[in-house]
Amino acid sequence: KTVKLPAFTSSPVEIDYLDNKYYFPGRITWEDVNMTLVDPSDPDAVSIIMSMLKKAGYNVKGIGTNDTQETINKLDAADITMTITVLDEDGNPLKTWNLNNAFIISADLGTMDYSSDDLRELSITVKYDWSTCTINGVANSYFPAATQT
Image 1 (cartoon, rainbow, N blue to C red):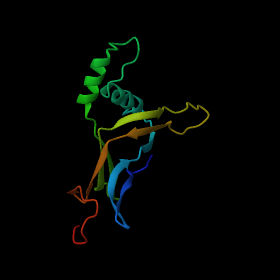
Image 2 (cartoon, rainbow, N blue to C red):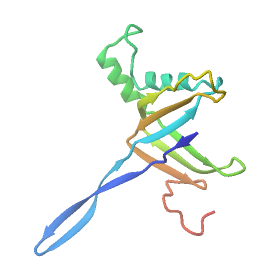
Image 3 (cartoon, rainbow, N blue to C red):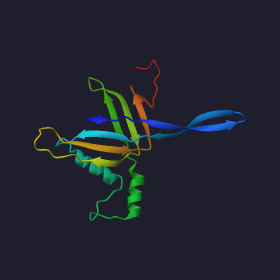
C-alpha cells in the first residue's frame, strides 16, 4: 500500500591542511525502509514475511534446530534482495530499487477488526546494506542523462 523509498546520509570527512579545511565524501549509511502491505488471502503476506524470517536464519523455538552456527551459515547464504518497483499508469516499470542483503528488523502483522470490511494491513521495517536502482531500463542509473528515455 505504501513504501518509503531508499534514502541515505553521508558523513563527510574533514581534513585540516595548514590553514584550510577540505571535505571529502565519507561513508554512506542507508536508512531503513518502511512498508505498509495489505494482506489478501492469496498471496498470503504473513506467510511471505515468515518465510523471509526463516531465510534470514531465524528459528522459532521448539521447531527445528537452534544451533547458532547453522543460523550464521543460513544468514551468510541468504543474500536476500528485496525489490521495489515503481509502475507507470499502464503497469510498466519506471524505476526498480533493489535492497541488497535485506532483512526484516520489525513487523506488525496487523489488527483483526471484524467491525470493518477493510483488508488487514501489515507494516514491516527492512534493513539492508545498500541499494541499486534501474531507471527506464538502465541499471544503476541514479542520475540518468537527459537523453535517456
